[in-house]
Every structure is written in C-alpha cells, then in structure tokens.
Length: 125
Image (cartoon, rainbow, N blue to C red; front, side, top):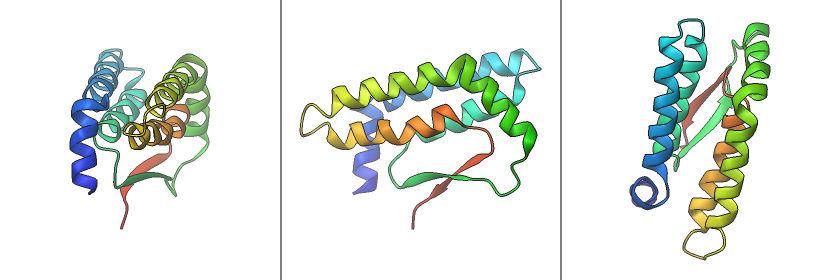
C-alpha cells in the first residue's frame, strides 16, 4: 500500500514538484559554500518530499547547539513560508476524499520544513 501511495504522491500529489524545489534550493545552498549545511537539509527534505509514505522524521541523538542556531536561521529565512505552503496545500488536498492521504503527507512535512537540522528520516517498521 505504501508503494502505491508513494507512486501516486510522486505523480499526482506534488511529490515531484516538491522534490524538485527542495533539490533546487539544495543546489543554491551548495553553491554559496557557507550554506552547505542548509543544502544538506534541503536535500534530505527533497528525498522525504518525494517518497513520504512509510517514513517519519526523528531527532538525531547527536544534534547540538550549532544545529539549533542554524534551525533558528532556517526558520526565520525559509522555514516558516515553506511550512505555510505545506499547510495550505494540505488543506486544499483534504477537501476531497481522495486527496486526504496526500494532505496528511503534506502535514507530515510541516515539522521537517520548520526545523530540518538535527533530524533524520527513518523508515517505519
């Protein structure tokens, strides 16, 4: 079931577009050298946005103060509007019964979009 939902999400539920957007942001962050940690986080979000069903995001045990400070910068400059876009897309997708799983997937991406550093994406059992 997860495979079918992921394929439908990637094609119809904006998974491809989200992954492309996060990938482009990662590329820009890698080019700017100083923002490479944000590029790594964007790349992680791109993979999660492309294939969200059967995965979840958890706190990384070794996360420390620098990742917290970087998360605050991320939140101020990018995270809040990315999270707002996921919330609005999730609400729009939940309007139809068929779109409810896709809306839930968008809501799952909100915490990752707000606070991506110091976290990792793991497969659910």
